[in-house]
Length: 87
Image (tube, rainbow, N blue to C red; front, side, top):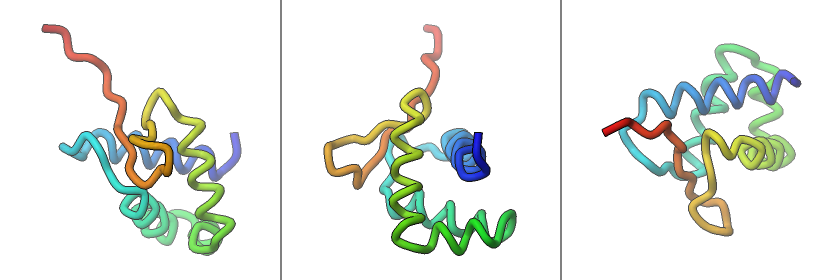
């Protein structure tokens, strides 16, 4: 697993746990990623701030269907996948 893969997986797990929202916009996810990377991995933050970085970020989100899935085909909004709570 690459640094980018690990970073994004950790980010999505954290955001899914703290967010009360079921869905979140791509821009919000990407903004959190860039901000978090600036503290944890500055070189990664520079990459994520580029067009190639945004494309890589989106590609990684698509590789995490057990955690997050696009709401619609354009990928502008994403839905957190949470474990079902037994009744």
